[in-house]
Length: 421
Ligand code: EPZ
Image 1: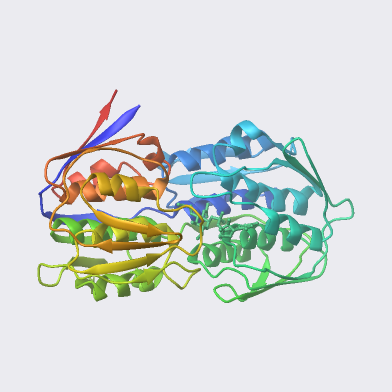
Image 2: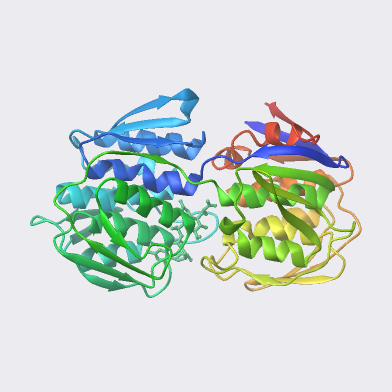
């Protein structure tokens, strides 16, 4: 297993290109099941999760060509030869549930393994299933699978989400494009990845209104065609790397970055005395005057502060002047980075879904354990500022969501390397 070794103390200077969004690509790819024409995705990120989605879609009959070293994905689903998404693939990646809506919409049939929980929480899919039932699907749950049928095809419905769910919004949005009649999704998620999906579906011939707002209205059509779509920039990768110059010092320009994708996060960084400036072709980040100030924040659905950047900002705040309060409102167990940061010298107390961070003057390098994608990234960020050497084990978590993190950071002067054991 690979590990990453970071030696702290180097201020950063340089430019980091931002890749296409993992969480956009993971919902854009299943959209290829909705049509028998080619769907081409450009600016695709090269990540383990994308490979897993390719494996799943291929098992259903989708043909996928990786072009330009994996940056372009050409997907074609002439026919769906298999309607079952097997546990062995689904257990590797929860986003596999996103094939269920398209399978039902195109074929009236889909059998998908229930994804099960993961490190950050139980992560049920009940909202996906209730929404599809509202559209006429008949679901049978057995042996850890959901066996879904819509023999006469899905029907348009009005469905209000009891809580905001990104994945359930994506699943139902895709399903509704081919349903008979009108679907209205209320209390829908507003994330940029959903806006990106809606734009791609519209290019394929779908009739959608309201993306980016809490109400989506979809007029079902008889069939969808192919399209070519550029995957939106990854706001979570961007936010993660923006912490690097803030925690290590120096300044970095993030190419292709738009502030609108991360405005709530950028606002919090500025409140912590970190400058986020629009420059030619991207965003420049550097500390305003040397020290970082404590800030309070809580995670919320977009446009609120993203849960996927909670661990990263908390890591910065371990070295801020003063006390910060962090409330994780989306997932029930997303503080796994905390024990590892404490081992590096951070002062953090957890009380339920709230963490209180008292800034310290320095962190000390240590061997640390990665647990989930974003917690792993935070330990690398901590290592950039820590005295001495930090060894991050279980780097496969990182590779699920970050393209060669050591290359992007070492290009800006970080002392970081990947070691294969
Ligand atoms: C997506 O997960 C992202 N993953 C997550 O990113 C992200 O953290 C999350 O949205 C929130 O922004 C992908 O897009 C592939 P949810 P998703 O449905 O769709 C509960 C990363 O690091 N819920 O919005 O699974 C759920 O338990 C990953 O890239 C139900 O109760 O998130 C959670 O508490 C981690 N029932 C809350 O809603 C359901 O049917 C939000 O989950 C669905 C969700």
